[in-house]
Each structure stands twice: as structure tokens, then as C-alpha cells.
Image (cartoon, rainbow, N blue to C red; front, side, top):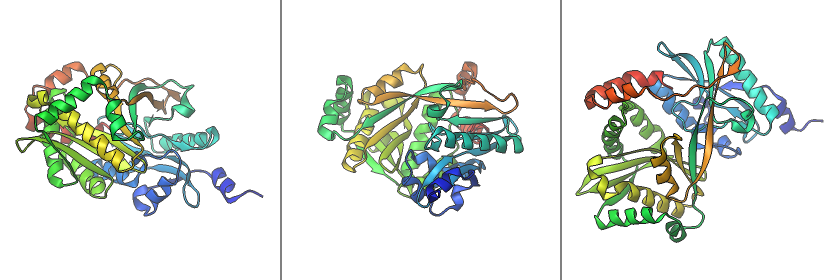
Length: 354
């Protein structure tokens, strides 16, 4: 006779909305392979901010998931209709104990996509099961082991990183770890400046307001700000869930770059995370051509790994490459636009970019 576990694994994945499941995060934290991006809180941020439809496929056991493929349906008049695992997410690994479980998830997702007339299915992760397929693109992730503790972590830093931390301390930069709405407003002010410098519009403020209300306020994240003379000049947004802290967004005022506030923000986060008993600090994704950012992350002693994104074309029934970089001419135009115009463009465009 099959055990309850075996019967669950053999079941077909069910379509479910995590936002409607009160016990979702409790089940998730008992499931191997989970991350913050699998939580119902992140799903609700995406749904509420951009009207995406949660279409998660899962097989539940009594106290965890046997398999899980989180997806959002993005229905756009500009970019078409598609399923994405998950929008604005660095990596969201499908959860499955073996290749057969994953294949069930994938087949069901393809069938759902055809029924709902998606152009394609995008999976941000899944290399364990899709390594034989052609990736759409790849990024680097960086992860820092916090187990050594503060003293050893500092000694493990690159010399230049240590010097930059000491420089910020010498300049009397003050760092605050906060969950306040004002900290999010301070971050957003800097974020609009930073995005403009990179030739990109910022995500709309309502996205970050939802992030505060649904994640930060629920004790699943925090904001770290650095101030000079009582003015916030750098800020990072972090998520936390289970044993990991995840760096998600960072911004700073370029005029104060010489004060090295960004370095002190990251160091204070590392110290706090280690003291709180977290095992890892994830530094988010980095484009392979962004050598400077990769060097910055490596300077903290973080180990690099590759993150593969996959795109399955539902019309051609094939995995396709699809570099998602924005046209350099558009970046040049965006970098010259006034910030109010960029904010307006962000409110219009991001809903279609997931």
C-alpha cells in the first residue's frame, strides 16, 4: 500500500492562489528549497501592485509542499500574455524532489498556458532540471556564509572593502536599521536618482508602499539607511525569511559617493544578520557584463554562482534565448529626462515588464 506521502507525490499539481491560503508560509518554511520569493507576501505585493494573477501549481503534503511552481499571469497590451515564475524576482526555483515531479509541474504549466493563451512561460531558475535546455539568459548570484561571525567576516573582507568601511566610519556616517514608512520614502527618493543615472525609470512608489505594508511591516524585511549630517544619502532594502537575508534594492546619492556610505550600510547589515542568527546573506543577481558590481559583491567574501533563466515559447514548443537588456539609446534618453517624467513612465511601463 502507498504511504500518504507517495499518494500526494503522484497527484496532479493543483492550481492555487497563495494569497488566499492562511497557512502558506508555515507550509513553505517546512519545505526544502524555499526562499522569500515563494512566500504569499511577495505574491500579494506583485498582485496588488500590478494586477498580476497568481497561478501557482502545487502538490501539498500534510505540513509542506511536495512540489511547487509559483507563477504570475502577466496580461499586457504591450508585451502580450505570459506566465512568469516570478516577475521582478532575482530567482524563484521550482520546488520538486525529483525530475518526474518537476516534469509534472512543467507539463501542467504548459497546458495551463495554452488554455489561457500565453505567448510563453518564463522560469527564473530551474537549472537543476532544465540544464539540457537552452537558457534565455543568465546572471550571477552571490551568497555570503554568515557562520564565521563578525570578527572573522571582517577579516575575510577584501582590503579595499575594509578601507571603505573605515572611511565611512571616520566620516561619522550614521547607519539605522528601520522598518518605518519614512525610511521607505527616503529610499525611494534615492532610488529615483539612482535609476535615472542608470538610464532607467523607477518602479512606481505604490510598489514600494505595498512592499512596506505587506513585507517590511510583517517582519519579513527591513531598510538600512546611512546619513550624513542628518540627511539620508544611501539606503538598501532587504528581505528575510527562514535562514536567509536577501539584498533586493539599493540606492545612493552620487554626490556623496566619496564618503563610502554604501559600504557601511552593507557591513552593518552583515553584522546585524550574523547577530540575529541568519545563516546566509544573498546579494541578488548581477548581469555578467557588470564587472564593477561583481567585484563589489566579491569584496565581501561572497561566493558567486550562475542563475539561469528559461523561456518556453508556447507557439513554437521550444526553449528560446531572449536577452532582456534595454536598448542603449533608450537608456540614454531616460538618463536625461526629469525625475517627475521618469516616475510617470515607471507608473505606466512596469506593469507590462514583468
